[in-house]
Image (cartoon, rainbow, N blue to C red; front, side, top):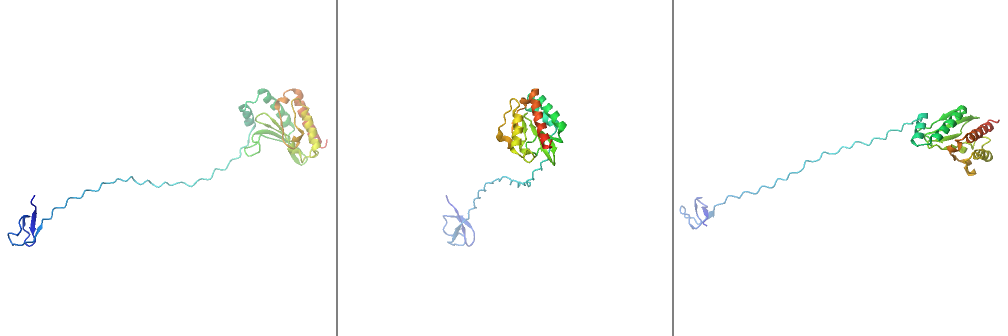
Length: 214
């Protein structure tokens, strides 16, 4: 293939096999500059749109807990939810009716108190208000020996043991002597019959009478 040359003096174009420029006789012929090939276009790289920055809200402090005072209705609803036997619920009602007649105050607990929901009667003895017992929502009765350790004459262990023996005189009740500084349980079913309930009530009348000096 014959290429084209260009004379450096007169810029005339001639075939590359011509040694002398026909017009000016020059030997200095330069090849015609070929047109530059077009450069391939760089592939277009599509970048995903930048994600918007995540703005995190500052952590909110937890809402303060609201103290909830429980009611009689809450107590009996909890007994029903826990499937306490109907006979035991009737016994609990009898104990509540008796104790509310002599108590200076009764409480069904609150969401902050120890034990939470439960029936607790208290009696004013001297300059103290003493908790007698607590009936929980499972139907058990806690005997509050622990609350009497600063109550004369029950600040004496021997007097608390006497109270324990009176309660142990109820059929089906066996509280160890080691529990006279604690809050041991007494089963409600032991008070279902009249004799058991009468012995329970008599024991508490004895305790209150001694604490009042009678």
